[in-house]
Length: 204
Ligand SMILES: [Zn+2]
Image (cartoon, rainbow, N blue to C red; front, side, top):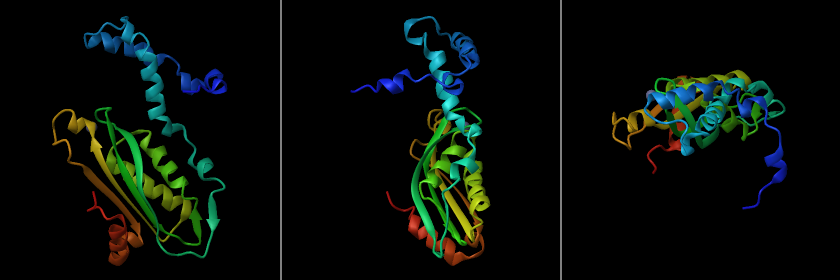
């Protein structure tokens, strides 16, 4: 594999490098579970964990208005816009364990549309926080409503939760489905049905 030296040598920002405060506590946690934080395989683990955790919660620091800045367009199009199968990874706030899955997002434009690539970015911003799946679903819907003022927004999230899978609370392949319907998706059955058939949750 070719190494991009410029990338490797780039000085790390404070966020990427972390402050070391999480790593410091992580060494205590490793001891507490009966591990030896000084053994070879674990020596750098606290720093790695801090870096990973800071990345996985970086959604708190993301400015969504800046993210969508310049990606809003005026159009005459008024049919449903739908982005399916947006992969996301989040962490449950009750157990600090991952949950991951797919989000399907639709909206009915009202004079404005957003660049399609921005929708997965918005999902990421809310996924990279401590979450519960219901709130993640709702927050994505409400943010799109706020940004675009469309005639309606629909979000469905399908996810698997490690806190259920690993602890044997649920069968490994059962998933959790949550949805948020705003505007026309809430009030008009035909609109909601069109979205559900386009997403076609029966597949796979
Ligand atoms: Zn959990």
